[in-house]
Amino acid sequence: MIGIDALIRMIAGLQEAELRRWIDERWVRPERAATGFVFREVDVARVRLIVELRQELAIDEEALPVVLQLLDQVYALRRRLKAMSDAIDAQPDAVRQAVQARLVRDAGGDED
Amino acid sequence: MAARNPYEVLGVKKDASEDEIRSAYRKLAKRYHPDLNPGNKEAEARFKEISGANDILGDKDKRARFDRGEIDASGAERPEAAYSRYRGFAEGAPGEKYEYRSAEGMAPEDLDDLFAMFGRGARGQRAGGTIRLRGADQQYSLTVDFLASVNGAKQRLSLAPDKSLDVTIPAGVRDGQVLRLQGQGGAGLNGGPNGDALIEIHVAPHAFFRRDGDDIHVDLPVTLGEAVLGGKVTVPTPAGPVSMTIPANSNTGRVLRLKGKGVAGRGDEYVTLKLVLPDGGDSELADFLKQWAAKHPYDPRRGMT
Image (tube, rainbow over all chains, first blue to last red; front, top):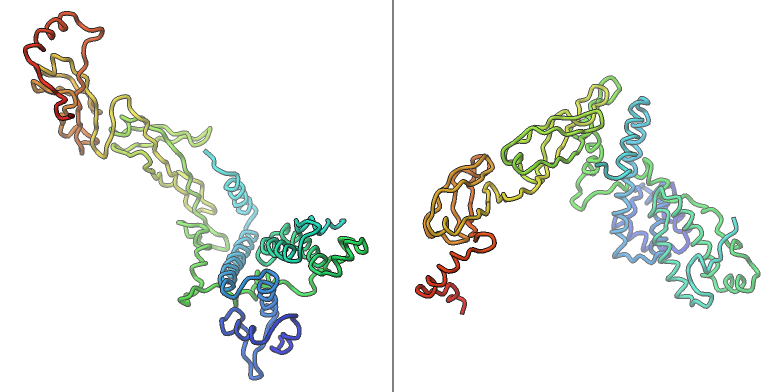
């Protein structure tokens, strides 16, 4: 958990004005404390990602929300897939094998 | 592992300009960035290699030193990222704060469709810690002959070498229609109900009947005598032959309707007459027509000039 000044010192090439704009756009969502914004680890990693997308991959701020929205969807799906696969893992062997056999069969293409 | 030549990694020539290198790097980085490719180990490895190559070629001094052989391709390989990548958080509970929400501020419940998909239909029920699951639906295709599709029939479908099913084909079934046989699909789990068998029907074409909606069409060959003088003929219908009267002076192409002789009693059968001359010609007929045609000229093509 760090404040905005520490975060800006930590990430090379990050300008305060652009970070504040990203917060206004809700691309980054720190918590608000009496002392100002507080960033968790996930927020720090997200800021780094946005900096990389902007600087290294040259994705401009017009395209950025599209990229972030798709990423957020992908990660939401992956969290659910993970939850589902954990639920399957917790099943008795017979169930797990049946699920696996079915997945293998479906991945094997059309049967006819 | 020896690092690959950075020029090869970025796919640029030895004399590439800084712009060319930057653009090659961006192109590859967009494709292989690990946060854009969660769970893809190969992308991660490629991205590391690409970053390493860019660290050398993207820096004038390092590039010059590499070109002079002072450092090797691995010389500037990035140390394992000193910070944690976003995906490490995003895939776990901390990522939930960036859960995707649509512009209308709708809750992310639509993504929970994923859970609903799981055990669809059976709506997996929890009972004593085990999930009761409905069996999967299984799809088959069955080719039926034309008359069976019109009149209905029973037909045996083999589902597996040791399993077959008698399928009742309803009268009037259409090509492409899917029959659902409840409980004949995959077995349920833990007492869940069986899935259904979904059978897609393919109707084989018939030698002379054609179907259009609920109507049947057939071309009926008639003799010259039947066309000129009229008379009773036997006409095939899907339900069996019926007798039909051809009016005198019926041209080829004339369409006669047999009411109620279509599909499953709903449609009609349309009979198109086709005049057929005797095989091999007939000299008596030819002689007669020579005299007759001279006396009775007519021009069936007058409308075409």
